[in-house]
Amino acid sequence: MDREREHERYQEWIDLAADGALGDAERRGLEAHLAACADCRREQERSHALVARLGSARIEVRPGFAREVLEALEPASWEARTPRSWRLPVALLAAVGGASAVLFGVGAAELDPGSGSIGALFSIVDLLRAAFVAGGGVAAASWRGLGGAVGEWLGDSAANWGAAAMLVLGANYLLYRLVRLRSRAARAAEAERRP
Amino acid sequence: MPHEPEPMTDEELVRTVLAGDRERFAGLVERYQARLVNYLYRLVRNTDDAHDLAQEVFVRVYQALDRFDPQYRFSTWLFRVAQNAAIDQIRRRRFRTVPIGTSEDARGEGTRELDVEDGGPSALDELTGRERDAEVRRAIDGLPWEYRELIVMRHYGELAYDEIAEAKGMPLGTVKNKLFRARQLLKSALATGS
Image (cartoon, rainbow over all chains, first blue to last red; front, side, top):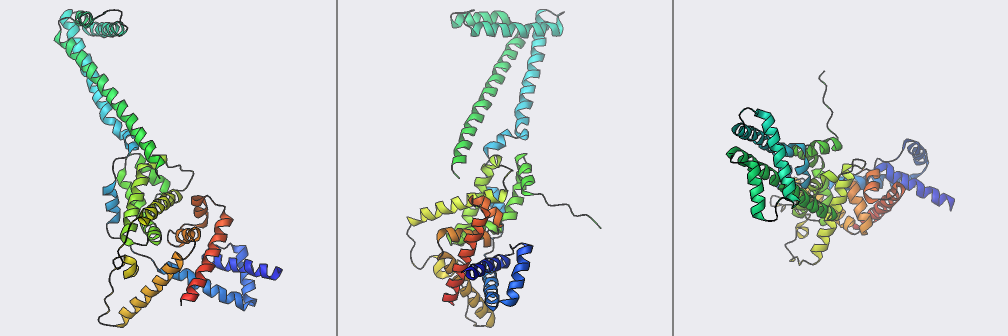
């Protein structure tokens, strides 16, 4: 019984050795055994023949396969989060912010030519305060009242109105990016469940 | 003597792709395409299906690349996705009727028709080789699914034993033992066949 079990262990070693997966210590033990066992030598030949046959029956990959794969790739959800993909939105926001600051400066200069950039700063603070008050529903109970309040703060300056419009557009753009990111994340979570 | 730069590891390639260099994904495709196509071919038994499925697997992996956990190997993740894709394909195919006489198996291993008109020795060699390949395929197909999967992972996917253990979530000793049993069955089947 022990001898049978020992023989089976050698057969496992023969199998592993033929597949190149037997450790050095076991290999030395196996070689010593093979020198004295004709049955195991025959088993070794069969194992080598089998591994060779398995290795020979392979197919070739069709030419241009890697290119086909690259062409089949659709933009992945994670690509929206790479640093490169943030360059355009950040550049756009910086441009909007810069243009707004210039327009506010011009608007302040129109109202009070001597005030310059400090005047522009006050205009921005006033605008933010107006937005806060309007948002809280304290300043105006109706659209007319709200319009009047905003109109009063912005004055007759076309530049101020332009800057306000750009700020609104910028805020909308940010909101759009946030919504898009959330929907992509939801799609990615769905895709993760599939594989 | 000029010093050859070390090729990038799988994990380095993944990081580069995630940083925005999409073309680097071709490096991963080229590294694994032969192993993946052969692995899938042995499971789905059709050359075109194997290529289509391999493409689908690479696309799925690309889509989920940001969820790759570098504490595991890329190869085991890739082959786990491939295994699931193959199982889905086989399940779908069970409900599909294949006309007799048009399947690639019927024409012998899904390869081109053999031109034997001149009857020369090379044609005879090719025919013999093809018959031997068909015998191997039949022997593998005759294995229980669990053994067949491991044999295909090892000999066509060329995964190391520890990679198979990781991909299948099995202890290494179990993988070795099952592969031994599977190859014993193959030896018997091929001895009977020949």
